[in-house]
Image 1: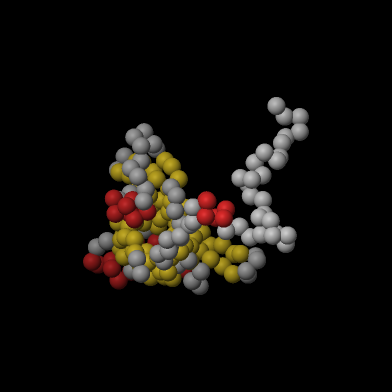
Image 2: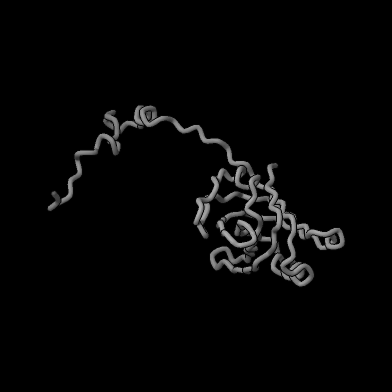
Length: 177
């Protein structure tokens, strides 16, 4: 299973939520980490333009679990390991101490907010290494538009169904130019 490794990671804040529809709780752990080259390459993000102070970045992945290991051998005993659902809401932030990445991991693990609180009480804003295992999305084999047009189902009478391409001139605005 592929993984992303975020260096200089720290928990910014924890958000416990209750979903009325599913009658379940979930936790959003919001992180800051270094905006590193390996993460940029894995997420297929380009170099941010000069002068850009902050910006949202594309991407969300299904995650299976994460491990947050505090820096410093004496703190490794406080490592946090939890199952995860997703990692996303990525944001680039330029700061005086280097480019940062903000993002969140969503987990449905019971007690995740309490575990994060315990971690924060011991480690605080101390930096850590965050390893996130995620599911690799399969490449989709998308047919070219011509092939898709040819494979349209036919109506009951055997005539091809209309497509956006064949209907192009059939709809006009009323009162338009």
